[in-house]
Length: 357
Image (tube, rainbow, N blue to C red; front, side):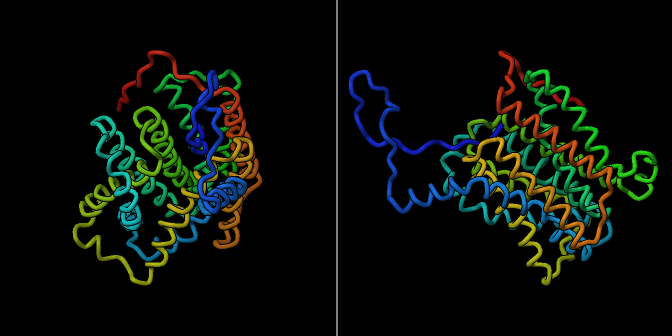
């Protein structure tokens, strides 16, 4: 489900007899602000592409930091994500101050959902994503994040009982086949993917994708009336203390001594560029972009990820992987198009099914 924003505010007026309220003309407000908003709306698809492009640069900042941290994958990845969330939490403070009244109205169920999303998706998924990078297959790690919509659709169907149109079921195995070819570059000799850690990197990347996809579904169920900016700020701030506790349990007080002053620009870059800035650009652009155009603009993500892997890290991509990328993207684009034409419906009376271990 794509993000939407309210339309322009209505000019204060009294409708005539029989005239509906929405007949009032929109109030452009101050001309300068109105002009800026119109320019942003016209460039919306560019914002989507820029946000997706920034997501594709993640390896440029995350990989060099990994090289400066202990070899323990879990400790090093948690240390990176902890510092990343420290920066994001500081950036979120103004958002939370502005949204303090909305936060005060949150009930127990909503707080439980926010904590689950913060700890599971924002903290846990990012740690798994970073561990996947540690295996050295950066292109695969990034490209497999395109499975998030697929995972969200499957979970929504199982957990929320959302009914999909029949063609959607035919596209799901196509997407799975595409993801398989990305993870196993030589499907004729799949054992090679185990020997060079392609499969290990893929499993951690898919674990991250699954947690991020689950957060999307869980948020739709429990947090439909919480604004995007408030939820973004809260997910960062709830993840931060959880990461601090996990980092301490993993390495004790010494776990916080591995940071280098020279890496500060890299930490700022990984937190802000493929993190906060990319998210804000993407969702602001998405609010004013047709679904079909947004799907095309999102191609900037895999293209950038592949180019970064090829040019910055001199990695290679096989013909089978290119075919897998085409399969996965085509299936996701098809699912997106079907959803835009006929959104999946939540069955009346359906409740979220309990998650079992």
